[in-house]
Image (cartoon, rainbow over all chains, first blue to last red):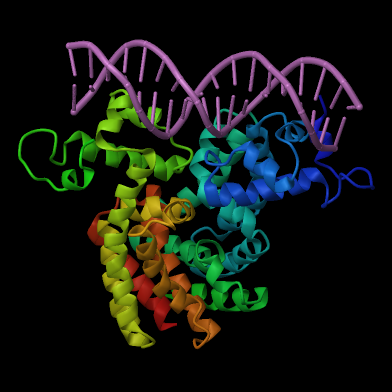
Length: 203
Length: 203
DNA sequence: GTCTATATTTCGATAGAC
DNA sequence: GTCTATCGAAATATAGAC
């Protein structure tokens, strides 16, 4: 058995470990298929066919199908940690939200594929790793700040809804309706999503 | 073989055909499981277990698993037709969008479960019924007005993004982050989503 | 690192009794 | 309308050659 944790680092040069390596290509293909078909709706045969390798070859890189999802969720949690931090810092200060959202939009822009695969599979992934000693608490800690905001009983319903709408507004062009904005540059998306969300938060 | 089309109408009284009938309960359970686990990630065994019937019992009500999805998508298309109409009517008039969104929010409020299951399975459902003679064109016709808006080359990128954000803002509290707003009434949700989306559209 | 071949389980679906 | 029993296909996963 190969130590997968060690392999997640790009330790040596040469072919087979860099961004063009089979393991990275596999994670890219799996992320795409999990996004369009869902984790449960994607088979290892489909992943293998896209990579033009045999099903068995996958098992050299990952012990189980669940481990493929685990590798993806680990990366999502790295990204989401940053978002949770911004939210906690912003607290209940209305002006602080503006700055927090600017940073969150930036994070979303540079990690759109991870946002999309999480959007489609959050229930499945949470159920899969709820009892995982490392990923379970991480997932819970990441969802907490969001719930503490949207469901905060100390906040006016108007503000709770405004914040949920602000997140949704950002997710619209970046995650939900991505296909319609493929002709626009990252800079254009950032600029107009920022001003639109800002207008929403200002009320 | 039973004529399923005839059964979709509540034709006779008595038990077994009304809202508490097995067929309706089955569609409700399937909609919920397709939402959380995805269409491909949900087995007929799981549906049967939730209904406390055998797997074979499902085949009395639906010829295939695909037909269960079909019945759900048919209802989604009924709802989406109304939305497509509002969008087409609104055209490029900025003030007309406000009224259109008020009506779309109302439709979303009364059909949240259908919005959620479509949000999670739109790719899967579109692929399933792309070649269906009745559902295929319906799905295409329903997605067209949305694309004509978000991807309209005659519209300024700022406005294209604003509209995508407006849809996303509505989807936030109603579809994506539903669990955090379960304590709020429909009236509270409608009121504050309306004003928030209006502020976003006003700029 | 990747292959063929295979074991085991679960899936969607059918047959036929009640 | 629902059941038990069963079929063939497809799923995850393993063994062992190269």
